[in-house]
Image (tube, rainbow, N blue to C red; front, top):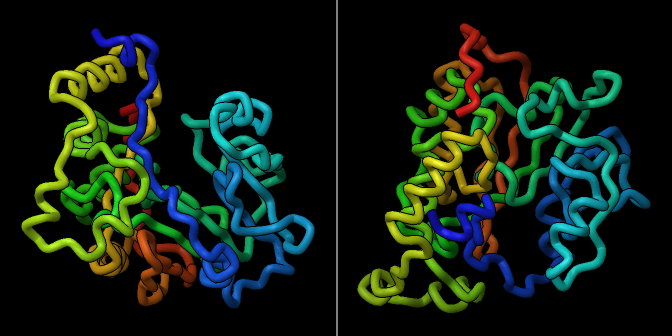
Length: 285
């Protein structure tokens, strides 16, 4: 077993180190949200899209702010925000929100791709008419670029099994196919020819290392962070349209808006879905 696996940690490839126009970026994320009404931002860490001094927002993360500051002490960021409540890894978000509060808007920036069960997630704590503003990595410009985009069949399976931690398939696919990068991916990749693009394939983990992490997670139940879903603007629009048609989600979906290595898409909750979970199916994996 490798040292990293014994230490139960995955070293993710570098990503999203580009210096964006943060004011422009926030305008895309927050545009037309009713920020004076109660809202929720998940996993803001040191790059929150919202500002508690200006917006009626709660923050949630899977650890306390102090734990996050210790965990990320090596980062060049000291502005990790304080959170309002912890979203425990093996619990639903709805069970963690204090006083069974509901929200009129929500923001999640580079979060959904990490969630093992994207369909059984945040809409449960949103009021009808609430807007969920998502920021997602475009796989073409990140370490997911040689992975297949996620399908409705995958999301359906993870919803039925109620994934609480990444499934073996999710974890192995991520580790086996993610690439090693220096963090300047968008500028380096955006103008490459298809042939040159293919030549940037550089696996971050060996096949054996990927297997060791999966077996360790399976035997210990440890939560290894991974990109469970893979997106492009086009694939995400099609994926969401399909799960809406299936009746699993009852939302209106905006057209995706691309900005450098990421894109923005909004879900407006129209009501409860036509299809409810048949139960029980809660799975640790």
